[in-house]
Image 1: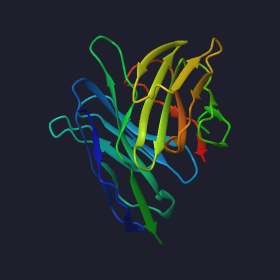
Image 2: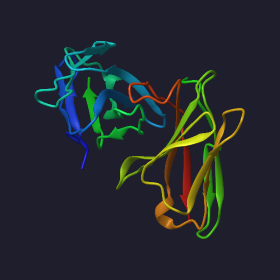
Image 3: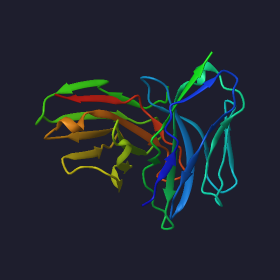
Length: 116
Length: 114
């Protein structure tokens, strides 16, 4: 069935390292793609989103490009900080041709640990 | 702060009991979504309401039900609770009901069933 797949980690990096978290999706409708971040003890916060193919979402140094040909939405950051340590979720939202929508489908989450 | 509020923050109860979780959406948002987060199942969509009407259903058990009131706040009712219902329950809201909408999440209610 429709799903979102992401690397689960934990991913451990040193401060200032380059980050990539892979995310791929399957969908039969017109998906929008999201990255959410969850800090310990908190709810999910939207990090960035893209609503159509080739769109690039960006926020706080993070970027992700909606690649329809590879059904991917990989998250990247050029230089991570200790404060980026959190769990990152890739998610897909669908809107059907009839105008209806559904809840978000989430990946399992990637636990990112940044060491000083 | 997302502007979405959830009460209570923590809830501890026994098997077989019934609980109600409450959510107030951001000002101006018409859609409310409920999600369950557990270690084994991850984050799963339960149900969506839009302006008082049920709009979409996900993996919601028959023992669970929800409603959205005229003031747009929503309640999730969980009955005949089982140990496996222990989880974090998140509410989210969005302006409309399109898949492209950003959903804003509340801080969650942690339910522990003993």
